[in-house]
Image 1: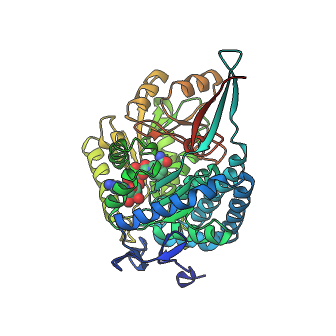
Image 2 (image 1 turned 45 degrees about the horizontal axis):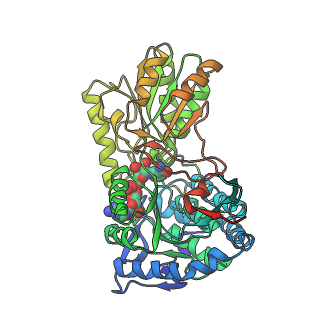
Image 3 (image 1 turned 90 degrees about the vertical axis):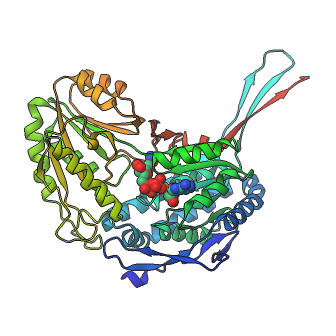
Length: 483
Ligand code: NAD
């Protein structure tokens, strides 16, 4: 299959129609590995977004009131068609986002697993009958679809971040308007095309594409029909959207930035810790919200760990994601590469040593060398900010209390990892880390069966698991009197 066989959809989806922007304007989507234009998508704004919201509003009663079993059947067909087209969809991800094919295939399966999961969860939306305060009364608690939901998604997992949201919304009986990231809209449009073919009715899922996200965001947060906003992206943009949503008192879920620590205690299995560090750090070229960003290693094992990590990192093949032997693809854009360079030079200026990498890759373009830095001081920029790149900064600590203090010394609280063998320590540390997700002796922790989400400035709400559907439901209290 080559790049010309990807069957890219170059239209947006509103109310069951594949449409251009009203103005006819389009913008190009570029392959970050080569700089080649892959195709174009409509450059839409507030007017088209309003139309998409109205389409979702119109489609809501029929979808919401349909038996959950029927919604589940449609969603299951959608899941199956995604898996049947896994290879083509993975190639679209690699083309527009850059990650290696093996990771792109895994992303498709991962995203699809949420559709499979929420097809069933939608069938288990139970209410309660609560004993009332008086003999003649009963209290009923109903759970009902919240209404039209809006989703704004990032470029780093262009398929899975969308599937994770749409799955829960549709399972709950909501209809949706989605705005994918401007760098990677083709994955979203491909999923929407398969949804339509699987029988998702017109208007239930709408996709609006835009080069400038702000007017679309304004409309999605201010239109009274939109009762729910779900966002995955940077904390900075999340705060803007929360402020806007406040005007409409919109229910919000926010999956925002992280600054994950990975702690290695001296009783850890060092080989396992290095393997876990490589998996979390260099996957997607470090452009993952739950990627370990700070490596805290106990003094007695810091040299051995850093040496092994540098050996493993320097062995990773960097290149174009379509090459099956490649482990690390390009970064997404020039600004991302510049941020990585800034973090490395700041760390070096503060006394850090480059153990491997540290510079742009010889391939040029947006390729960067997998990097390990030693002796990084805790006040370096790279410890304070999310790098979102293939750089592992290592810092040493003496005691468990110091490790926990350093790990928690961030306004973020998405994921944390630690490697240890003492059972009492495992419980102590897991309980004290101020993060929404903690991996113990494991660094690849996401699953449709587990609640994904952060605390502090990493977000609000959870995706996946039996809890994830609650973000798309309202509770209604019905008081039955005169019994
Ligand atoms: P971003 O915040 O720049 O963009 C995310 C989305 O928001 C895109 O669709 C973009 O077009 C849109 N957007 C930007 N400005 C907007 C505005 N004013 N109004 C409405 N929409 C707007 O983030 P990004 O660079 O695409 O993604 C990287 C960030 O996402 C990182 O911080 C990463 O940690 C975070 N992320 C978090 C999770 C999670 O689940 N917590 C998952 C993936 C990525």
